[in-house]
Every structure is written in structure tokens, then in C-alpha cells.
Image (cartoon, rainbow over all chains, first blue to last red):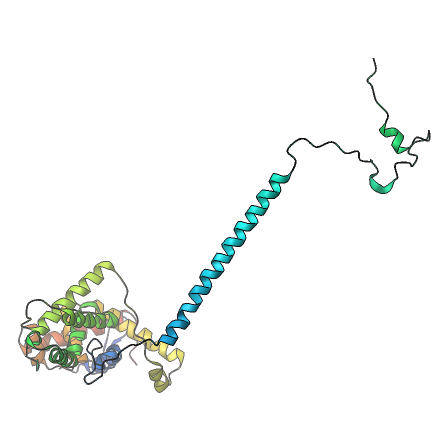
Length: 137
Length: 181
């Protein structure tokens, strides 16, 4: 291995072989993953006992409860929606099908009584209702 | 170099696991170094090691005569596939204990990370054989004779290549404005 002294390059001094040795040793020490020192994960650990999984009956019952509650709540929701639909349809059927009679409404609303005088001639609201208008000939 | 010479394929399941485990302990670093020389990416090289061993673990085909060569071929093929797909590998993060033990500030870690990336980038500019001798020398601390058997050439040729590769790397670093501390 040559131990050349640093020489001046165009952009700065080129590190010597010894400096490069140290630089590369540090570099690869950090570069190599520490995970390589661990055992291969796919291989089961020697002497480890096999793990068996079991589910207790009590836990199973607890797990089933929310599912039945969910179905029940869904059934109640569907039934209530159906009931609401039936009620809306029955209300729309009970309405009179023919044209309704026009109602007489005072131009002043409920503020004035039909017997109150509305004009300078002393005509009451009741009397204006009975006036029949005819087009001029 | 290769101390495990038995053929794991002919062994019972439990013995086979032990042989694979032992082979991993003895050869995973060497395989990582060779894969690293191919890709200059520590995480991807580690992924290649894991992938090759996992594939061998699930392998049910013909008996493998040379396990090291088999793993190398599988890892190299995997690296080529990954390079073609340009997928990224997960970063291996140091554990919290490592951080606590180092007691480095965030700035120190950032500077260290930049420094590593500069050297990594310079290594990528070397050809693969030059990179391979540097990786084997400095990550595995192999002798020229050991490297000569892997690279199928004389120890003298390895010494010459190593010296040339180191000088070329130094020049690339200086060109890139790397400051040696």
C-alpha cells in the first residue's frame, strides 16, 4: 500500500492513502446496517415452544353481541322508514281531488271587521262583497 | 472462506433451518458487501440479502450445490429487477437506543449524513470492480488473497486495483469539493 503524501489538485489537496484508509473505514463502519448482526428472521428460534391460539367461549359471546344489536337497530330503522312512507302516502290520498272553492279574503286581512266602513259613502266590507260588476256596454 | 459446506436441501426441516441460520451469520455481511458494490445503496443491498435468503428458505426445487453462488445470483437478479422498476427501498433507521448512545445533535447527524452521501456518490462514479475491491477491503477487511479468490485474479492485481481505485475515489471527492477533516 502506498502512503503518498497529499498533492495539490485543481480543486484542493488530494487526501493521502492513509487518510483515505481512515475515511473509508469510517464510511463503511457507518454504511453497513446493524441489522446484519441480527439472526435471520425467517428461521424460528431454536428451542422456542410453538404458540397455540385459543378463543374462550365467553369472549366469543361478547363478540357476537354487537353484531345482533347492529341487525336489530337496522331492522328498527327500516321499519320506521317504512312506517313514515306509509303515513306520507295516506295523507296525500286523503286530500280532496277536485278544485277547491275560492275563499273570500278581506284586503285588510283580519284587522277590520266585515261591518266596518271602508269608503267615504259609508259602505261596509260586507256590502262591497255583494256588489256585482258588469262591463260597460 | 466458506465454512458451511453441507447441503441444506438434503437435511430435515429443523436441521435445514439451523444450517440456513448459520450460513446467514457467516455470509450475510459478505453478500451485503458484494450487493453494495453493485448498487451503492446500503438499504437496497440489505434488502437483496434478505430477499435471497428468504427465497432460499422457501425454495423446494433441485438441491443447491453451491449455496453462496445461488444466493449471489438470486440477489443480483433481484437488484437488477429493482433497478429496472426504479422502486425505492425503505430507509433503515437507527434505533432510539443508538441515537441516545451517540448523543449527537440533529445538526451533527445531518452533516454526517451529507458526508456519507458525498462518498456514496463518489463511489458510484467508479466502475463496479474498483468499487468491489474497496467494499471488500474496508467493509469486510479482507486480504488481497481473499479478494483474489472471489474476483478470480492474482493478489498482486488486487493490490494494484485497490491502490488505483482509492486514488481515483480521492480525486473524485476533491473534484466534488469534499473537505477531508
